[in-house]
Length: 350
Image (cartoon, rainbow, N blue to C red; front, side, top):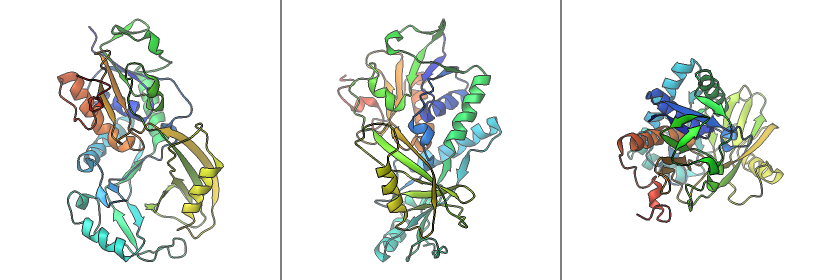
């Protein structure tokens, strides 16, 4: 029997999973159906290890960040291209109370791995409204997601590990075949579209639509991300991405004037400069009810697995989670319950 794994979904999560298999010498085929409007194609790609609402490290940040750093470096070596950029985040602090809280929280572990206890003075007084200074987050950064996906798909295509087609659920059974090729396991990394997968019913998704702008600001160059209710970070000379919105109720996947104006209202609370909007995109994030990924084995078909629910954090979560899922498949290790779909009793009551 073949040990080859079939991955359904060529977005960020599926492509990151494919790279993990590739780097560990596991045979696979990545199937990408080229849906044009996915969260992966509009994702900003930022990874931030600090939750700004509480000034605490995000879930498993002390494990996730070192893992992703090594993971993306290996891929860059294979592709001989740069797409992962380490860049500090400057959080605009609102008042002296926030300053003192930042200083206190930055001394705790694991916060100390990511938070500078020294407050950074505002050197952009003619462009940025900030009277008390910035809290600096280090060991943060972003992945150029479009470049990563394009380069990855091109590379996998050249080595015959990528196929563009659509797989219909009605054709999937325990004898996994695609055009006469046999697979041992199938992993679904479908993002937003995974809600309709009959092999994983009753999963409690909580989809969030996100919208992102790109703007031009003349004579303003920074080498870090600025954050206050949204992010603003450089993508080219005088060009910045701004976002992202979170909409829990929405009608479609299209960008809206309402969210555009709301993003600009928040931007103008700290940006004191003229700008021009040059792009506006939207996508739907596969978020979950408890903001933890959906990983695990189908209760309906033993050789079917899910790799989904990364929300807005696929760049941060997916590399480490891919290692956990592969270990679970190959070595029958148990996944941590807070990311295993078994935590939802309706999915797997036993």
